[in-house]
Length: 212
Length: 212
DNA sequence: GGAGACTAAGCAAGCGCTCACTTACCTGGA
DNA sequence: TCCAGGTAAGTGAGCGCTTGCTTAGTCTCC
Image (tube, rainbow over all chains, first blue to last red; front, top):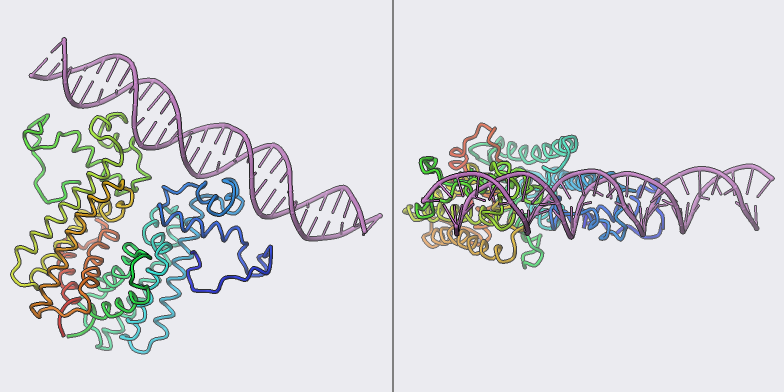
């Protein structure tokens, strides 16, 4: 569930993977997944460290072998989620020709990610306030990067004449609002697929900026 | 802070207003305001009953003279917030002539309310999952009413030819996402006023539906 | 004198986190 | 080949504290 990119499952060949392999030790990874699920389902404050431990198949004390605090777990989940979202957006924007194509790509990608990974996305969007000030600052920098990608696409579109908007920052915010809010209402039980949601939001995003 | 409509402050002339006056008894009202502030600032689970009591100038036990549980306080705040939002939307839609005017009115009103009363709005949008099943059902009915108002305006606009959308429910959801998300990012310190936000979102909403 | 509003004190449960300890495995000298 | 020594992972028990809520009693004001 934390594997926020559609990467293949890590092979289980190395029983005790060392950091030298570039692999995260199994147990720490399992704890991050357990924490992400629990935080998303019940919220940070309603989640107990005992809950996280038992989801990961550990005793309550086992958590503290790998993480120094409950908030540390939240930070790792939040940071990784922000980084993945940023990387996806940067990639989508870079691979597009025109600003119109770029907007379609980033809105589709962003909305789809918020559906596909709605648990991590909820932590990213709604548990931000529960980070320590230091961790909040670190995450804030990532948020500014994400905002910058979207804003640049809108700015480019206005410059090329493809887009016409009242105000670039306001429009950027509204675009992101639509995609971010997907994480609030998305439910895996609904019949709409994340891919379909992405496609729909690519079109809706263009409506917000198109000239005429 | 809970006075979610821009009603004038209730006069302080009646020291112990009786329910016969149509007024909520002072202390219960103060408790609701205190709970709304605390829930919005820290979240339901991170808020303690002692915190609510002290914000209202009571001892911890004083809360339970007026409310049976912490969740009961959350429910009252959430229900009242939903009702106010619904009434505002219904009024805005009813007072408009064309679907275009109606959409402008409801988007402006809804976005403005989410800024002006962002504390209550956050409780309405993000603390929903912490209600008991019974209370959740009651609030869900109000949510369906709110959704229905927006959906009807979009449907009317499509019927009259003023709007052209791919899919009515999807567009309704996207419109509401933009407005709802205002409560997430709004900060009273920013220079944009709730009125300006409302005006901007009225225009953005129209962009999402306009034909051609 | 009785009803309602309120408090001081406190209970049972649960919280995040620590501690002393066991286990499993790795290492290198004889 | 062996085993002493070292290390990281993991556990059972539980500490100090906070939580939502209750109880028993006091203080009004009609």
